[in-house]
Length: 456
View 1 (cartoon, one colour):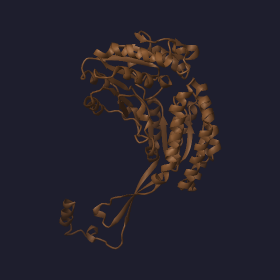
View 2 (tube, one colour; view 1 turned 90 degrees about the vertical axis):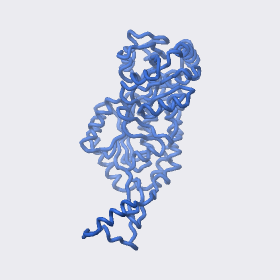
View 3 (cartoon, helix red, strand yellow; view 1 turned 180 degrees about the horizontal axis):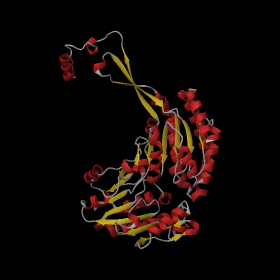
View 4 (cartoon, one colour; view 1 turned 30 degrees about the vertical axis):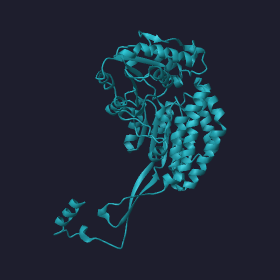
């Protein structure tokens, strides 16, 4: 079935229909209309899958996709138009251009944590660039995945865009096929599997992964506002966000004030008993619930720590001064658990941050602008914020992606279009002048060429 589907998409791509910008815009407009019409269905599907609050579903999923689609439709003709670049003097006289051409047949593998947004956003860019797409949504969010399949069937021809559902076996079958581009969002371990599968065919890939994202709070930070923004960024989607703060590094003089402020903000957000709150999502499945619960063993929970396996509930939890070699400090947490580690001097930060692979995000809370900028420059990471968390994701003018272990490549806005486009350089040489120095025989020409190159 999968080979037949891919062959049909290859045939459709070779027909040249997706090369027409007018056709791309037509199907993207149809997709936009369907997504706007089905927004309530989408938020309900997300709630069924892991009790995601409607407000969070709109803010972090449907609204982002709709704005991205509108922006893409508006700018697509400009993005797809050949760009004239300044020619090299050695090629005088010439006109030089960059052409954006689609790779061809694209595989998009989407994750479960933002199962709608992180499926549709790369799909939009791939279609805008003129590719065909096979979308593999997560099997852990069956309601959202089924809805995605239904919407895609109504908008696209299957030989252009189609959804293939299934578990690990299906993903393995898909990766065994020869694609022109693979876009994967998920864990580092699975990202390595994708990279290995792509290697034999030298298939280009984008890997959107994760890591242990540090959140630095220095002695000058506005603690009240910092606590509010950390609570939101950490516990939105129940902490199941690849760019959520993974652990806090706070100046020792501010730790107790931070605990007091963050306790207050958690209560404001989720009430005295967060388990009763309709504004806190649940853990995706029992496997992840058990993994997160084990991280709490033998830890000092300053706030929270309560769990309920029946409802896949883990309270917003703050862990005080975990040992750096404890399980909670080894890998990305990906849940509503936030370790807090104090530091004495800024030099202490290196010992912790540099002991991990390069993270997807880093956050600095400080009213000392020079110091904050220094920290941002010092460490390598995908992207981040000064005096806030995760909001850099919302700006389509900023590339979103990791570095090193946290990912390969970037997307958002025009960066998504560029990710799914090969940039083809073209030199259009004029015929009215032909400088003979480059042609053989070369005798007596080398000194002349050296003088010209030196002048250039």
